[in-house]
Amino acid sequence: MDRSSRWAIGTATGVLVFLALAAPFLGVGVAWTLFGISPFLVVWVVIRVLKDTSEPPDELKEAAEWGYADQPDLRPVW
Image (cartoon, rainbow, N blue to C red; front, side, top):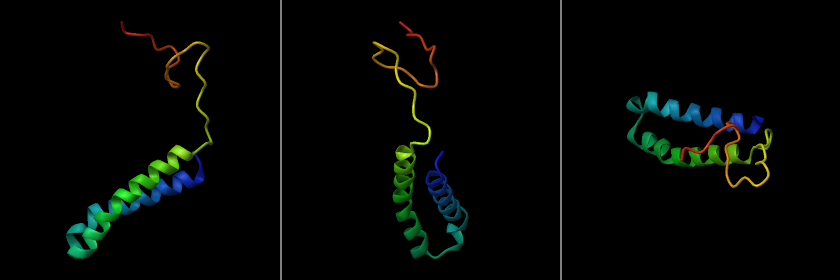
């Protein structure tokens, strides 16, 4: 995983853990501000992880319409 992805995950996790643990002791305005920022933190993490190209996914085999990169021997159920 790329360094910027790790930093984004760590920062967002730290802020959200701080919010979860300290919200009862903070003022209402600070708690609502942190709560309002949290969706943007999650979107930021998702974008950073999706843009991470340090580990390229495996290509599908010839004539394969779909597949899973982590389970190459997955067989259809039907």
